[in-house]
Length: 213
Image (cartoon, rainbow, N blue to C red):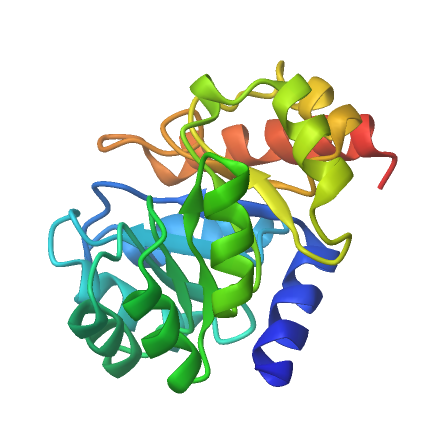
């Protein structure tokens, strides 16, 4: 777990923004991945409800070994195993499932379960989660993030996901968010690599401007 925690800390120190590539195809993966890495991204997830997600993960991990790459929408221990076999080192879920967390830890992977309440958050951390995906952020206001940050361990990253834009990041950062997962505002099916790179650069500038990083 220490190695995995260190891996996450390194990626977060570089840029604590997770690129969520829902709908990515293996054919698009090289160009989209290059656009993100060139923009400074170190965290990339391909949700498992994308077309041929394991193949995309395999392509990305081979081309960009310096990045922490894996899957989102991971719902079972078997899926964790599949992601690991494809070369993924990151497991992100929309929910907290103890068996998913346990399997990820057993395989030395970074695991970020989804939580929406203090009870879920503490349970996930007790199970060994490396950080927390606050989801859906549309339901979790900056005021809620501030309240959670006041009681959760300081070392546990809090990352709102869902509806995050370059315009609403500042309020969450002020409240204590450590980073974000970025979905359709960063990538959506049909977006070119240039589109993604332009969006990525806007997010990076907004984050660094708000955080002082």
